[in-house]
Length: 134
Image 1 (cartoon, rainbow, N blue to C red):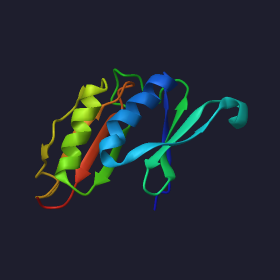
Image 2: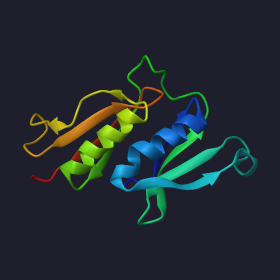
Image 3: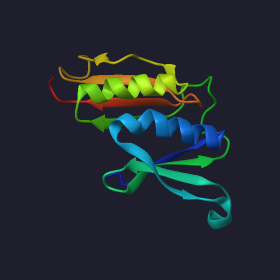
Image 4: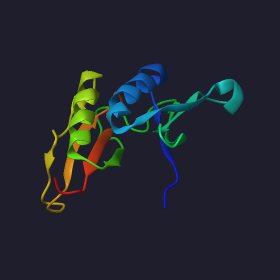
């Protein structure tokens, strides 16, 4: 089981703000920040479900893992309702993300796979998915 994961971003402040806005509709927020003076090398921020208080998705200031013109890394956040998928997509686009697949069913995966895909500021493919029937 994966406990936490993370990526590097080219503009830490802008990306932290983008993720905070894009993931707010699914209950995520910035839960922890550790400056370079503490880590010894780079600023980091941990995001996670605000209800649990445990960061499980980390961003770090550095060159991004993949330039915006390449496929980038793919992360999918599981949610419990299709409304959360729709809200994520709307918030992520409004915050400056780029459409990579609007909310909708993806029956090629399974009958109830409802997802939305947005590229973040560094081109990473960020998804929310609901596996529950409507």
